[in-house]
Length: 561
Image 1: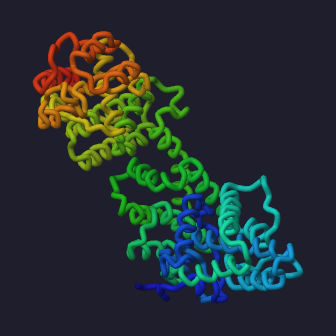
Image 2 (image 1 turned 45 degrees about the vertical axis):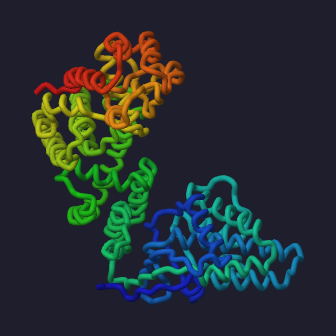
Image 3 (image 1 turned 180 degrees about the vertical axis):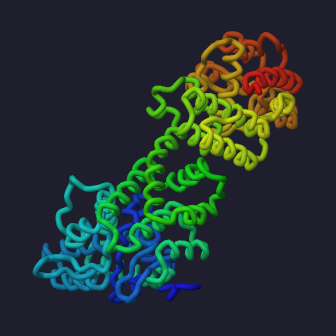
């Protein structure tokens, strides 16, 4: 492939022990691995050391070089940094053995050889480390001045990634020293590991910009997130000519990106970028997003305008996903409840529309929009179970109308709004199996119907109320019901009702006559009605009750066009 100088699968020994140096570019992310990552790596290494496995494949490393000596790490810095911290933790223990006189001369020799082979050397006069690995601008000082020289690690004043590096170093120190007591064992551990860990190394020349390397990786099946692709591309635009790039420009770029990460975290950022873009432009699929962004962002002005707006709108995105966020403190209860409903549904298709709506509509119009989204999602997705892909185009049209006209036409919802008749039929046959998500949705539906009937204001998220399966999920012989009837009926909405938690815990598999007595004393009208209206409970009664609930539901979840 054009621009790739070399591709090979080689051992860690050949990567670190070859006299080369590796540089994490200044625009790469900070160190971010946590305990779960360290533990996974450690377990793999233990298996290698104990010969449970003969080798372990660690994935791709991507380096960029012009002189075959200094290699910029395009992908792989988290793995290389973590392995280096592990090796240095063993160097610390060897130094302690040396200083306490335990096989001092041999342990000093072991430490120096491991240091020179895999970490680098320390200048004996300045004590400044000449390391094989140079980290990014936020991590390298801590790595170079504290970790590698085995200095006392500061307890305060460290940034988040430096705290993770310190924790990683100390974590591996405890692991290795608890298993291996002698310098010989510790050294053997390293020497076995470096021969058994393998990476596929892709080396590219300077003629390929960093973002093109990422594109190459994607083509080879190494899936990097849109956030990684975008960050690399944006930084490459601003840093395209270092002589002309002012320090304050680069600092602003780093600040804006760090603000995005602070608000969203690395996991949510790729998702947010797509929702943000689709709130202002025609819908772009996930796999085409980076290509689209690249074709629209061409110069520094574009870069800074995009990042400033991404940072500004990030608060809206976070708040949409978190109805209890203080962002909504001055908004109506109706709005917060509609957002809570969408969260319970697990709805995502409307996020771009809501970003556009919150950015461009008055509060009353935005509240109305969120309410309509919840009603449509209830009719179309939750009860109708219809194809969600068709919604995205409708939501995008509404988002663009709002973006351009500061208003929208609710009649556009009609294409994804099942009619009363369609909704009633679907509701009359709906069932929800017993899962955590389904239980939340069922509780929401029954609570909304209860509030409609009794004109009450019960909270559908209250822990005091539970879902009661009138016909139990696994009824005993007292129910005298055939298996096929049980399987057809136990999860139907007509068989479910609300019940106080303290009452439900005693019912379990009791007979309908026994449950009916409890239902009579419930605070919920829909549950009292069961006791009043049904002397027996079976398939016919479940269907009849569900039909009644369906008629109420089509009135509750309705948009008047």
